[in-house]
Image (tube, rainbow, N blue to C red):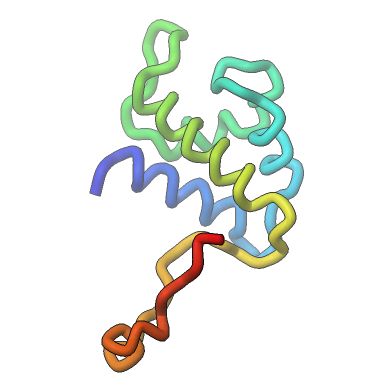
Length: 106
């Protein structure tokens, strides 16, 4: 898997470490529009601990930006959901063939 996926998954799992979402961090992710925004400071330690190749010149790397963007989108999607909405949906082979596992996008 890619570094971006691995880092993003690690951070999302940290945000839900004890089963209770870190609503403050999720709110900051929704409010900010870029990793360099001052409001994103709360999430920086999580990003810096999960991203293997950090910026050396103070300008965010493409990887740091990609992880932040994925987290920003996830936080917007997660808003209003009390349950953890990250991860794969368990599938049953019988249900898969009958189409019972299909999910509506509406």
